[in-house]
Structures are given as structure tokens and as C-alpha cells.
Amino acid sequence: MKAKPKTKTKSKPAMKSKAAARAKPKAKVAGNQTLMPHLVCAGAAKAIDFYKKAFGAVEKMRLPGKDGKLIHASVTINGACVMLVDEMPQWGALSPKSLKGTPVTVHLYVDDVDAFFKRAVKAGATPIMPVADTFWGDRYGVLEDPFGHRWSIATHLRDMTAKEIQKAMPKEMMCP
Image (cartoon, rainbow, N blue to C red; front, side):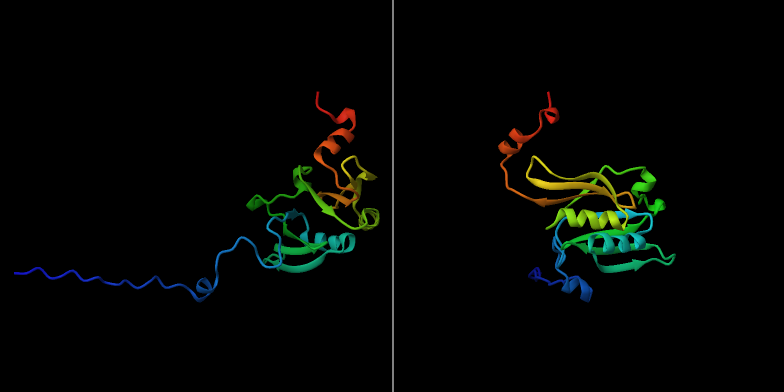
């Protein structure tokens, strides 16, 4: 008896959903930068209102959960996307207010730091470091928003090399 010749069988490819068939993985969502802050706020809806008034934010989306808390929201500030969520301790999402401070400062370049800073303070931000010309070439100040997030706001005045910045750095700031 002769052995049957082996035939190649073609298996059908796995079926994909229509959405999966359309979607191609990518590192960037259209209209967003690849790195953006995701702020946890005790009162994210109020934070959005504050960011609109203080920073000229434009709301992109708001997704409330069943309890009314925001499970996701996003705004643009000076062209950059910032995502927000309400504080949800059960998921480990704690705001700076619950943590009694923040180790993070969000840095934002603007055309007129003095006017931007003044508007933010008028809207309820607390000045931490007043606006001043710095040794690294920016006019720069730091404030804290009512939700505990720190923001450094700057207008770039001049380009400097690392050597020039090192030389301009005050002696008391240098490591021994």
C-alpha cells in the first residue's frame, strides 16, 4: 500500500473584530503629544473650570462615571494635552491634597509669563516662587493650583549652552 501524499492544509486566519481590523497600533494618538501629564484631582470638574479660567485651557472631553466623578477628562493648555481624573482612593488614584503635597511640577512655556502668572493667581493659584529672570535663560515662576498641583511657568529669553548655564549658576547652588 502506498502512503498518501501529504497535502498542505490552509488554516483560516483568526477572525478579528471590525474595530481591531481597522486599528493599527501606534505610539501616538492623533492631536496629542507622546508624553502628557495625567492629573489626579479632588474635584476634577472644578479643576477643569479653574484651568480654563487660569490657564486658558480648552476642554476636549469629559467622561463621568455613574457617581458623577470624572473617570477621564482632557484639556489642552497652550497646545499641550493634559488628562485629568477624579480622586479615587479605591483605585490608588490620590490627589496632592490627600498626599499632603506633590513631588511633581508641570512645566509650561508661554509667550508672556508675567501676564499668564498674574491671570492664574487672580483665578486662585498660590504663588510659590515669583516670576524672575533666571540664570538658565528663562523668565520663570512657580505656582500651586487649588488642587495641589505645582506648575512652573516660563518664557524663554535666550538660548544657553550647558557650560554657560553652569558658569552663570550662583555659587550657593553648586554641589561641594
